[in-house]
Length: 418
Image (tube, rainbow, N blue to C red; front, top):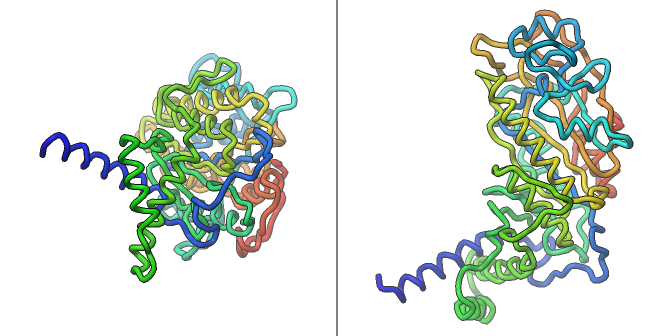
């Protein structure tokens, strides 16, 4: 292959990659290229929800530890967090008369204990009957439907029921390699591993040539699949133009924020730039992987907790006053067993916890019904349904939804976190 052929090959590959970004565009909101951000929208006026999924089943009994529960220390004699003031071990940061936060989460703790705090925890979260399979439980959390029920993700259903002709081009964006289950469905959402993928890597002449092909080729009479391919090409370039103002390689965080050099740190940094770019994006999905701690939990969870803490704390520092428009909510498919196993870890459990930060979150509190830890018990009872927490985010923060469609079959029980 000569140099000229290699350049053409590279340009074609880059075009195909960007075209894939736009695949899945449906007629629900109309072609992406035909939609524009409504004029006159004030900078920072879009309400945003960041959904951070802790994949693997985070051990929330060590992140937000019930250190004063009479059975906690006996059930976790070697891996448990110790009460504040303890002379040794992993010593927790004080939250209230029941709980202490993992010491690796110092930034989150400072936000939780701050005056007029907007950082809160909902503990003993889950669903009944619970399932301890990663795949089944992640599917449940992301669809808010019964196990194996076909259907769209909860974010996508919300976008469908709140759709209007004035919708901005992109309301749902995942900063990960593929769309999460929560964003799959009829409403067009998009996924990129990094906002760097919004940059067209070919030369301007190549772009003009390929755009001319996609825009000027008659599609009347074409098979539906070929028509979609041409429309996807058009929409891919519209997507690149929409995000053209971003410059992730040169973005400078505000207010002295310093993001960790990690996958999550990068995603949160790019999420902040997207929000500041005033592009109308309402939902941003990010992942924090590696929470399946069957062994060596003490050392491993400290690394994960520090990454989430530093990444999200830098994000809110970077946002500054825009934090009032943004709520971050964490999710994980389940919690862990109450008691430690023989490998210094914990196995798949039931109830977990959700962290909410930003917006008008009722902070400084651990919300929900706390069932306590049973002596000799295996699982934390999921006394608070995760769908009720998400409903409060959509209703109180995002401006309303249709609960019967987004959370079908669920009878709402107020949590009060928002």
